[in-house]
Length: 58
Image 1 (spheres, helix red, strand yellow):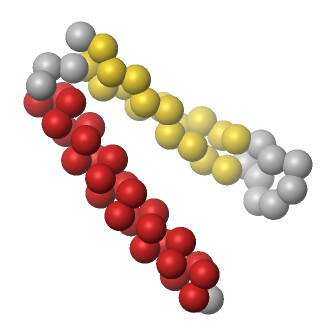
Image 2 (cartoon, rainbow, N blue to C red):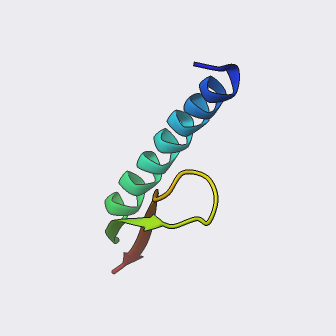
């Protein structure tokens, strides 16, 4: 694994930790949280790229 890849993996891990904590807090405060995995297609680079779509409502 290159240094760039290692840094990207660490950043992703931290971002997911924050994201999951935020989802738990929103649910605890009474919001209905909807998550959906969507695919982003790119003309260059890896494709498809998974993305997470999030919505919260009462």
